[in-house]
Image (cartoon, rainbow, N blue to C red):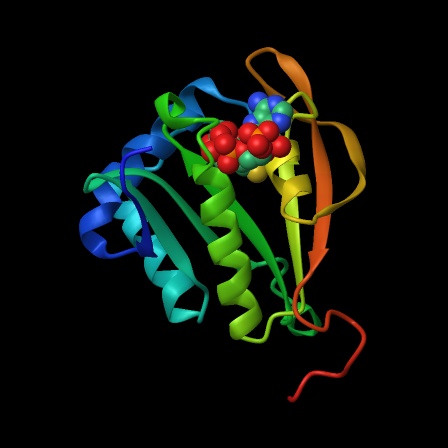
Length: 176
Ligand SMILES: CC(C)(COP(=O)(O)OP(=O)(O)OC[C@H]1O[C@@H](n2cnc3c(N)ncnc32)[C@H](O)[C@@H]1OP(=O)(O)O)[C@@H](O)C(=O)NCCC(=O)NCCS
């Protein structure tokens, strides 16, 4: 494969990231959003995540942005503060070349370095073999399926919950 670079996302990457996500919203079932957020909204979300201390990474091949991954709060209530939920999206032409795996591995390592203890994937559509497969390869365990909780493109959609411990997971107490 041509040189793949995984690096912290900057504002300059957000137009390409907005386009990648727009395709996922319009044509895919991984996300349950129905209206693609515009660049201003993606910029606002990026700011909320990075200001909140969460990592956000860009994958670029030969300088062109082809994917991204980030972690965010799993749920807002404070006892969940050591648990993150992850997201990873690639442009369709670059699927199955190991880029999603590299992005997710980098995100996991960074979340461990920042002291988070659990990562949860809420995968849209139980037919999403790519997402289930890449999470399994990164050590996520299958937790279960919420059947028929989404409705998109005229059909009911499941969510699949997967989870991976980060660092010591629940075997030691956090520092603070
Ligand atoms: C899910 C996604 C990020 C995976 O990234 P990717 O670069 O295509 O996956 P990789 O090439 O890194 O695959 C890594 C491993 O995952 C598994 N995998 C990936 N795609 C798969 C598929 N379609 N079917 C089964 N297993 C798959 C395999 O174990 C694979 O390893 P292998 O190629 O050595 O067999 C990508 O397909 C994507 O962006 N999909 C659309 C958006 C999406 O579903 N995002 C996840 C939201 S929760």
